[in-house]
Length: 318
Image 1: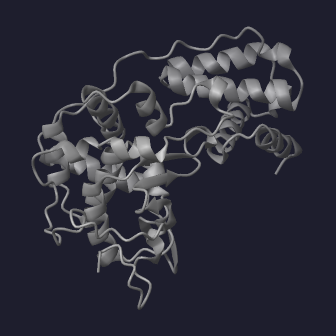
Image 2: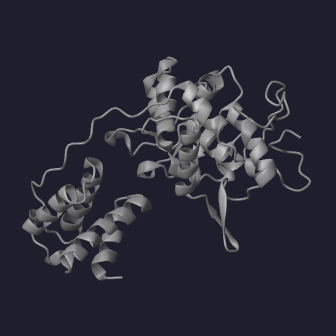
């Protein structure tokens, strides 16, 4: 690793950037260097401007992606080699302000009903019922599920922030069936990599969603992230306070990013996931009834203990 790259990584981490941001920023500066086939500290202002123009015109990147590249390159010249003049007054691109695609409740129902694989169904149900980002769902751990408080602890979300999300009673029923069959130990949704377990692939989740979307005959330009948009919209339509929705989604203002905010347990318990307002059962596999109605949710805070050998504290309610 070159000294410049090492310094950039160190500076990014000192500024508490998430590892995802570190990787992204380093990659964009590396692309710049490869484009001109020389060290980035040898690239001048005009070359930087021409490169950003190349990304916009020839690569046809979105404004959001262009601005990430802009921020990465700007960070390098300002904080790594102290050459702010190279990037001074190079404006960012205007963001795409188009409204996000939102699915109706009936469309969400169809997608979940037509996802037949139990693991895929559980992941997509969790994304919608808790408003999670697909990357957050993929890296959830068993210990992040709190059945006592009916909350999901989302660690290292976008911007490296932590938060609590809703654990829907309907989703918990499905989780119990999933855990009974797959018995995860560390990552809630895992994949086998030779002899090791790793977090489930985001790409695999996206593929499962596209398959269900096709089966449902839905022609909207939707992605897994559309389930998150739909979660927020359906809550808003149900009259949930906007501030609570922002907290559940992890949408903190720049001024508040240093404060760890989460919804109080009382507030979370009073908010219903939109999934639980449906009049139909989206679960294709029938589960034992009465788990929730009879108060049989075990008070273990760690779902990971749910299937310890010989343990009576089972997420299945047994």
